[in-house]
Length: 247
Image 1 (cartoon, rainbow, N blue to C red):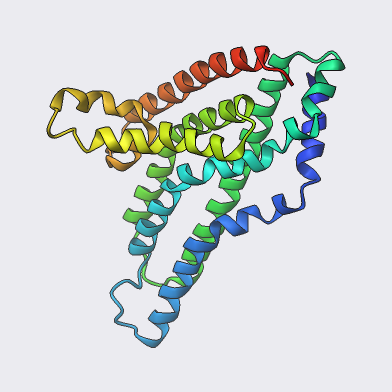
Image 2: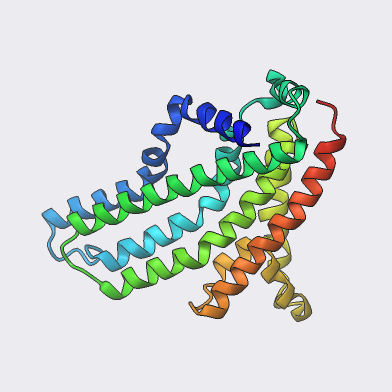
């Protein structure tokens, strides 16, 4: 497993686009910051020329990462089936379980690193350009990120499972958005008509993100518990299907 982990690290490092991904993902919020800053230069009374508005905008941008996760995971997962890589690895004596865990660890580590770089880029840009500060909104921004990270990991677990079990990219994406977005939003529309389903909607990461739940140790703990449950369920399902899958 150790050698396979090393080979995965080398494979990721050889991808040229990987070094530009943090800047590409951060481009939209940073463009928003520059837009507000430029308008503020010509109009000092511009009401949105403050860090409070920008941090609220970036908070929404960060939550939208759940929609980008499958594209990032598929890119980092690479064309393992079509290239015949899995077949070569299995024939070398590495178990499929080790392959699953190794890929999960490496891709998750890369996504976390990209998220940290994005966060630093965004915060540095905001604090450097925007003169009117709002420390309270900045605090809310960081608290929101702390709450959101485990929910993104839960979504990531589903995406990894689909990469192992579904060879076709389009089918992979359709299943991901059905499970993580379409079905939750569909049931969410009925929460006021059918109150009994409302408590159960919290099992969906996207619902937890959009409910604007107040920050607390309990809410963070619940989100991490949800991430762990998602990982365990998707790992058992993904590993079971992958073990029986012809590669």
